[in-house]
Image (cartoon, rainbow, N blue to C red):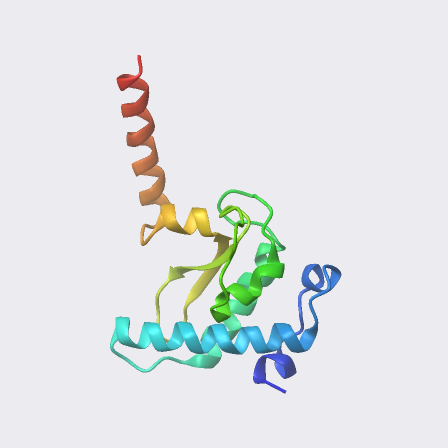
Length: 145
């Protein structure tokens, strides 16, 4: 059994939609490796994989199945997406993605949001995104009036 299956209990909301502990643990291990390898190159330092695993699990629990930024429901059946399986004809607002809130090799923070939200937010902090959206909306109102 993968490390995630042994140590991290599947959140109740995932269990209720039929995702099993072993599948969750395997996914948790795959996503941990994928993000730690990518971030090792971004940060140019060794990544504490257990800290990543813990932070990703905490983000899943904190989401309770919803986009942390918009409150929209996510379809966590699409966890396979993170393993590289294609998302075919799904609304981007339903596809859960892992967002870096704090990029840190030893104490990262993650959040779950939709693919649509993650594309819009990109590498911006929430405060930066709010500022951008305010400017964007003001310009659109001015342009359209």
